[in-house]
Length: 172
Image (tube, rainbow, N blue to C red; front, side):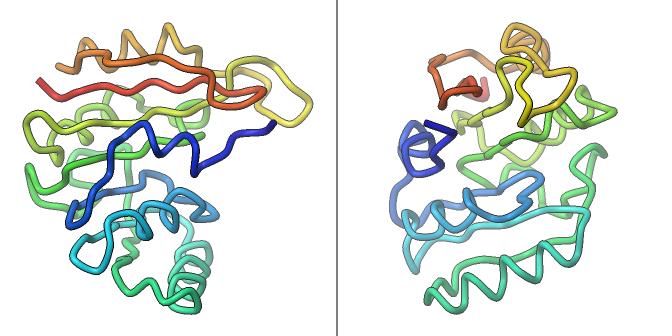
């Protein structure tokens, strides 16, 4: 199976009322799934650089009765680029973006800045070279080094679909 957001996101332990941010939200699959799980008392922030994708997420969320989604036109590779205040969110989702970022260190530090102490980050990315994926994947080993040097501890590693790996880190 390809990568299933509902299965992968279950690794984050989302509960009612949590605040979650989806870095590089893209088509919004993770945003929408998170919004269902955190309920009306929770909040999901979808951050992307493409305004048309954000508008599509907003529209799809509304049509599904998910009024707890906020879209943010922002830069996940810049400290402060998400426009979220320090220590605000309980969980961060970084799905299929590491392979395409130019500043992975800045991304990891932005995750750390906005995540509460003890909060968790879910990293999903391409595990191998596939005709569907990038020419140069960002390996799970490289992702682990990136987040650990930024102050995170690896909680779990798992197969996140046929061509994807999954990692869950805790902010120390």
